[in-house]
Image (cartoon, rainbow, N blue to C red; front, side, top):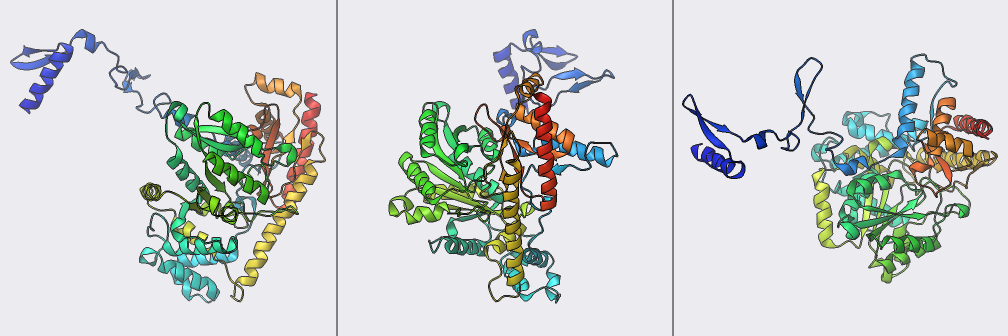
Amino acid sequence: MEVVCGSLVKSLRASQGARLVSVTGELTLTVPRALSSLSATRRGLPKEKMTENGVMSRAKVLTIDTMNPTVKKVEYAVRGPIVQRAVELERELSEGMKKPFAEVIRANIGDAHAMGQQPITFFRQVLALCSYPELLSDNTFPEDAKSRACRILQSCGGNSLGAYSASQGIDSVRHDVARYIERRDGGVPCDPDDIYLTTGASDGIVTMLKLLVCGEGAGRTGVMISIPQYPLYSAALAELGAVQINYYLNEEKCWSLDISELQRALDEARRYCNPRALCIINPGNPTGQVQSRECIEDVIRFAAKERLFLMADEVYQDNVYADGCQFHSFKKVLFEMGPEYSETVELASFHSTSKCYMGECGFRGGYMEIINMDEEVKAQLTKLLSVRLCPPVPGQALMDLVVNPPRPGEPSYDSFIKERTATLSALAEKAKLTEQVLNTVQGISCNPVQGAMYSFPRITIPDKAINEATDQGQLPDMFYCMKMLEETGICLVPGSGFGQKDGTYHFRMTILPPRDKLKILLNKVKEFHQKFTQQYS
């Protein structure tokens, strides 16, 4: 203790001119006025302030000024101010407050079951059996559901969904995913070691971005994302301190992707960052376009030529509705283009249990497949994933059922196919209905909803409304959507939350509500837009 104290005193004497004074036989260390007069903030201490009752209280260590600055740049429109106000309105309605509407209709997010879509019976039966194995003796469950549950449980530690899995995911599930991809892609080989189970697709996307982002200044990683985009991408890039490189989809050509636009965006970005990755969403969110095979080939050639890591977000791969449209996976096209591309282009593709006909958002199941990744980087990826231990095991079980559903001849096959077909057919009908109704409204233009679960119509906002929005410090489409919410109870997301060309305005709405409720929603949108236009003309 004496050595430590002596060293401390010596250090303070040398650096600040402190001295020892004898007070009643004890040594006291006195600090010069210059040091004692420094503010708490300058000395790295929380600043004290006086409370109303005269007691000194220390300021928070973590404040808006001292928190991670990149987090403050994160925005996520689909759960932003519009949704927060929708929640308040729902509470006000429940408390008996009078509104111009009887209920809030949320069309802001692709949450299928919240919108009334029914779960697939087989999936829930197996998950129930896995969660409570005592039900395996219950004769009301079909034998194929029981056998699936037993297989999944045998792959879990202690035969329980409550046990951790390997960080990369349950081995048998990864093998089932690999076999699914081979069937989907017409026999293109898939190595289970290239499969990583994830907490929804979002987890995989953010993980890959973490691996890609590095550098400072003009050497910072740039990531190309489509505009309009799904806000996960812009939010993740902001949090990671990466550079967002916007390339614009062509609204006049049904939100198609133009290689010349990719080249323009890339060439401009190279002046101020290091572009390293290209993100594609197919089918598109929020725009609902489905890319042609020719377009995918062009994108792969572009990525190969420009040495870009490809990230293919394919979570809506079963959601294709328009005649003449077909889902083509980037993996399949890449391998069919031959070794020049299949052995060189680095690709990560993503899928989820949250969309398609499943709509099981809450289980947070998903996977990513990586192609041509450096082996040393793969080791780092596994290390990074081990930090969060493992994805939710019930979500992994559900992912296994999605890629390994009932087969022909099994007891549950007919009912599974019936439910799956009914769900996708209903979505196709609602996609067409949305396009048809919105295009009857003067001042609204809606491209065909070829796939996914959303429409992204363009709206005309009168100058008077734009001026009023500006006076209120709001973007015009936010002003428009907020007024719609307050007057109709319909919760949409302004296009500015996804990105759009300057001078254009849009909103995103899901096609998920039941058909009858969707008709009500669309008619309310139509009436509101007509009234809004008349009011501000």
